[in-house]
Image (cartoon, rainbow, N blue to C red; front, side, top):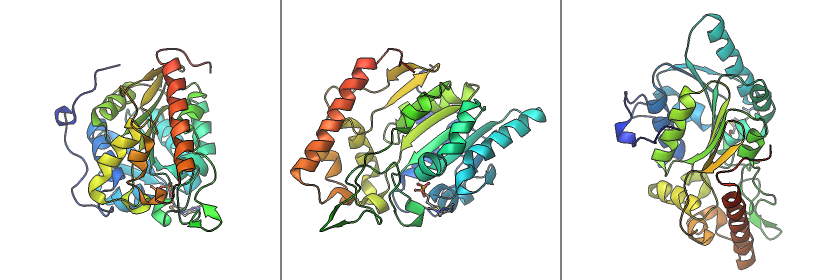
Length: 299
Ligand SMILES: Cc1ncc(C[n+]2csc(CCOP(=O)(O)OP(=O)(O)O)c2C)c(N)n1
């Protein structure tokens, strides 16, 4: 893999315009700015309903197509095949939210991955259906308060765990799967540069904190994103060549999950046993990932 390049040294123009209608501190805006600067102008991007389409579309002056919520996988497949048929080489990127990826979008994405379509799928994961008011998705973490999993006398927030979509995608044996965070731009840039040059289906899953839906000060988006990684809640890794697993960032010691969660209003209600549960999960997952670091996943 090529060495990650600091963002300032990514050659090429800024593609995203300064003005857009995202919320203050929107993680997706940072993610889109980095992504399109790395991918460059020879890119077609696609959207399904969600914040990226609604809040950012007007500020990304590239070829664009959008489709129904469930159709992302079909749309990028069609565009990639159409371009190939007319002999045009362009990067085809699907820039979708967690709902458009992990819930309603999962079937068409899986089919496109199984066919190994030559596309890059980016899941901009803000962990709920933010564009429609913050309803829970399959990528909302356990105990998070959302508009459909509110905290009340009989409810402690979301009841189930976050789906492990990067591993679901790795199980498709596609050329590249990675997780990333907007708080680690060099790591993200290196992954985008690697994916840009590779043929076949590439999947990059980026955690993108949402001040509006997660309930934190918009000035703290990067701080929250960083703590989610440093506490082991959102580990950074990649799976190349179908099954070679590698952690791309290894904090010497994990920070307590409470440091990350306490900043977020959606977890304001957590009691000691709930913190303990999330802490235990993070530590156990990290132990498992360290065990497979540098090895082949049995996929
Ligand atoms: C079939 C269908 N169901 C529901 C909707 C309404 N809808 C539009 S955007 C959206 C939420 C998108 O959430 P996500 O994919 O997580 O992206 P985000 O906005 O959070 O970035 C929903 C539910 C729709 N457009 N189509």
